Amino acid sequence: MIMDSFQLTSITLTLLKEHSILWLQLIPMLIVVELPLSLLVLTGIFRWAYHQPTPLPTHYPSLSFMIVCYGEGDAITVSIDTLVEQIYPGNIEILVIVDGASQNQHTYHAAIRAKKKHKKRRLRTIRVLPKWQRGGRVSSCNAGLSQAKNDIVFAIDGDTSFDNNMAIEMVNNFTDPNIIGSGGTLRVRNWRTNFITRMQALEYMMSIQAGKTGMAAWGVLNNISGAFGAFRKDALRQVGGWDTHTAEDLDLTMRLKQYKKRYPKSDVAFSPLAVGHTDVPDTLKGIVMQRLRWDGDLLFIFFRKHRQGLTPRLLGWGNFLFILVYGILQNILMPLLIFGYTLFLFAQYPLTFVFAILLTLYFVYMVMIIIHFVVFIGLVSERKYADTTLIGWLPFYPFFAFFMRLVTAFSMINELVRRSHEESGMAPWWVLKRGKKF
Image (tube, rainbow, N blue to C red):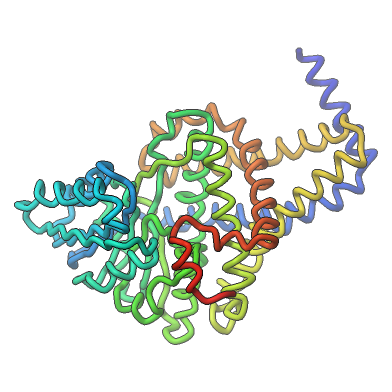
């Protein structure tokens, strides 16, 4: 077995030397895109950790949580329960917006039962807002925004539950009056289900919790998740609230960043220790369909809806360069280049060489993933023991990430050819049809 490993290594090195021209194509991808992003995230995590621990707030403002739900049924009660049970000492208003309540009687009545269950809880108020005709997520968020009584507003999904210290951790960011929006950590609740959910658990840990921690520390947070975000109500109203179409979270984040033109000191933040839990797709079809929508939306937002707003004049040079390199180059162009490069390898070179170069790339990315995982466990994770149980699945993660890049490449082509963002299930077709075309 040892001899086989040495022979494979020797063959790999020989083949790579014979075809060194390919490294002139691969190395720029690593040096120009992947390595700087890794360094940005890692140094940002160390910068964030250096400023810990954050002192507890001295003032606890009243909060409004908008739970946007459609067909969750009894599961909506879990979200409501975890908000009522927050250890936050201030007032919490919970607005349960039931979209299409006439068709979703199950969800509507579950929300009513939860309201009755907690009606005597001190400093907690639950209001159920039925939207009898379905209008989609955007109209539900805007309906909640119009009814919210408090200055800090949370927008969360109906299938998301929370740690009981989430509100305190999130409000820490808003002690800075210049923070107009903040994202929170999302973790995979059903990670034990199968291989696909375990891979997504690793992805959420290193991409959302660790990645956004590092990016936010340098002031270049890429997105506030639509499933879990907090905002100042006045800032939301000034940018027009949520907008029709899809990718409403990225669209809103872009407009909040452009808000900096009028208010240069304003900023968006991220709270790594404000933790929410959500279920992810547990089938191959489910995750592919989800990513076709997510990734196709990137192209729609950057190249169609916000192409005129992608300027350093509106975004500032830091956010502009970050979006240019990591929003467009890495997330849109790189998957297409990787897809084309892979096809080129299989078409032009023998399988032994293709295997050699892919094996080498695997080890390079594996080293990067291990470094990120160790830093995440050591400095960011609030569940160190539970998270380390996934270490045995790390060797499979590069394969999952590569497959997701191929799915992203297909989603870009799908958006270009079919304008797939108009087929989103986030809103009924008649709402999307009336929206402005881009």
